[in-house]
Length: 301
Ligand SMILES: Nc1ncnc2c1ncn2[C@@H]1O[C@H](COP(=O)(O)OP(=O)(O)OP(=O)(O)O)[C@@H](O)[C@H]1O
Image (cartoon, rainbow, N blue to C red; front, side):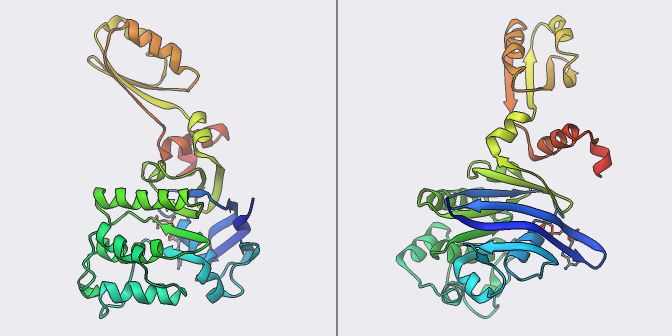
């Protein structure tokens, strides 16, 4: 397997504040890799360090087996990058900007570019200064999806997009995945990326707390169960479960994947009207990792 990107022991400080602490992970060819963490965790700093826009203090960053930052111009030809906040040249139109972004990376406008402009419903004739945040984001996304590169990096890519465009974005990422391309997707919202990613790294306060397959991580964490029952006497059987709450006939609690079958059997006896089982959120997963490490959530705040 080809390692497209490898970070090992990367540190970065802003003055006395250490924003990245020994950050280590790698992404293999063909993977869609989620880079997850709450606001301020260090995702953008890590990405900007990978791109050589910020200088790391120490550690290794390799792109396709070579130092990613010794020749930034060459590296940038291998990467398509969409930042969270896209700034464009105000006097160029969207169409001109897409052409320029493509040429800067050594790429050409193609039929696919025009298809993407249609798909994302961008008016390419308008000047960039008139675009909303979402439209500026679309311009950068269209240029990125038009480019044929080794690594696509999207930093909080859907923060300015409406649900329809968010779905278009997901479709295009899944197309890249089907074509064997490699993608790094950062987000602070697990549900935004979970349909696309294979593996994830979770970062908090500049430290990678976990790297692994998303499905494995979700299996380690508790699932949330909400149910509406008729036989409230049976409730006593559930009251001992974690995070149990009750409001009249509505109960909710969390259980592990192993507990789930027996709990569902008990719920069936309590004549369930409605049951909702939701997979763990990013925050649930954080909590689990901290509890596993004997640290309380409050210690982390
Ligand atoms: N140029 C800078 N100078 C000083 N501190 C910075 C600088 N850039 C980032 N930071 C700090 O580094 C930490 C990580 O910020 P970063 O933007 O990487 O987080 P993030 O995970 O991308 O979060 P968000 O989703 O909010 O963008 C934050 O505490 C931020 O205030």
